[in-house]
Image (cartoon, rainbow over all chains, first blue to last red):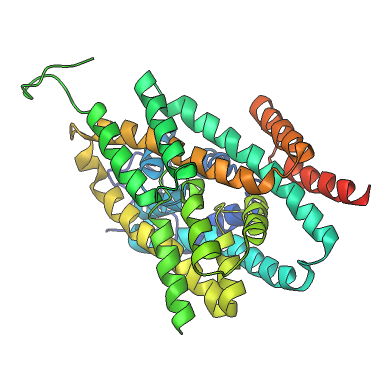
Length: 198
Length: 174
């Protein structure tokens, strides 16, 4: 990759240095409290630094959500790679992960010291109930974007029931339901010879 | 050494299941760390998972906590690398060829199809988590209140989650 700023990239400004990429993602990794990391990403990348336009941001986000891996780190990799290639991807991901990883390592040691204390247990149990509320909200928001027809809801319920009620291992459920769902949404029309069945 | 290998294997495997978010891996996370390897108890795992929701950055940093519980700082480092490297390389590689896939006629099918499967996996994770977290009517009420608060307002999730913890402390005190 060349250093020139006249690349084919939609964002036309000069590309940021590796140090700058690391710093911006480190700040995001340290300040994105409460889970909504996508909002922080958009503010930092699109609004404040102008490294991406909104269309590219949404496209990279849809790649992040389709592939395995967390949105926060997948976005770091894709954005870092666009800005500075493999090193950009690596440093962006490290910056994103280091603050949280440090905190959760410290939490493990603190838990070893105070985890049996009934007061901290009561606090953590309350937090678990609150976190459950957060997860269901995230699920509803994700669902409102991706679920379109009755068949999609059937796939959701069948997958959830198989795993949570019948103890089917996640990889089997993922592969079986994935094949059915992808086949249901298979490309139809010209050239396939198989007419639409809806 | 064997423990570090187990940590690497478990978290590398789990990372491949996180389609649509960390919660999709929750059922297998529980099976492996609690039932198979006995690294943590279910309540302990639930506590780390919930703390991880409060921590900044990616919301599955609790894998680092489990690594640290099992094998100290090396365990934490191995868990971190194992959880993020395999999917990271996959994302990096697919990201580079994605523009070539833009016109591939199966791409929308894969995106929509995997979308509904991932919602199903998140739902399964939420059900399993609920069995541990909702132990009585009070905690059910806490989860429901947080749910509606976050659905209807744009408040930072950290506040109601910390408040939930304080409700737990209050219930213990009374």
